[in-house]
Amino acid sequence: MLFFPYSSMQKAVESTTRQDTESAYMLINCELGFESSIIEQLKLIPNIKEARGVFGNYDILVKIQAASVESLREIVTFKIRKIPKIYCTTTIMCSRVLV
Image 1 (cartoon, rainbow, N blue to C red):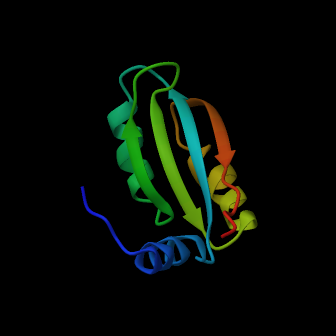
Image 2 (tube, rainbow, N blue to C red):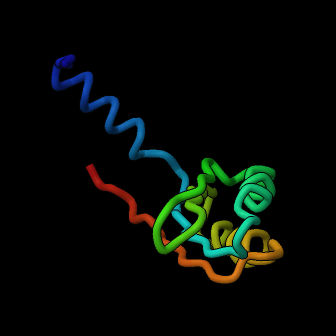
Image 3 (spheres, rainbow, N blue to C red):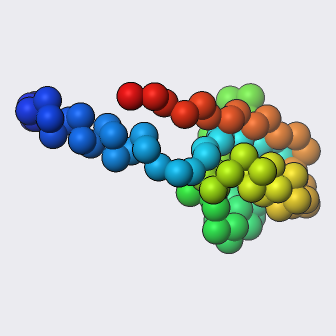
């Protein structure tokens, strides 16, 4: 286990929380057998930071980052939800962490 002085850790936390970006996670249900194809299409969208297949009630988990909440809304509404074979989405907006 590595231990860092408090000041180093504090700087690391501040650098990750003071970004001028908004984040969201999206849970996607899609048609059976189209998960890989949809993930490849998602990865072509510049603001998609991660897209993975998952097990359980959902088929795909996506991490999105954008400059503003409006940008996130446009990506979700006009890019992701327009991909064929996506049936249902649940979007989770992240709140900004205050340090």
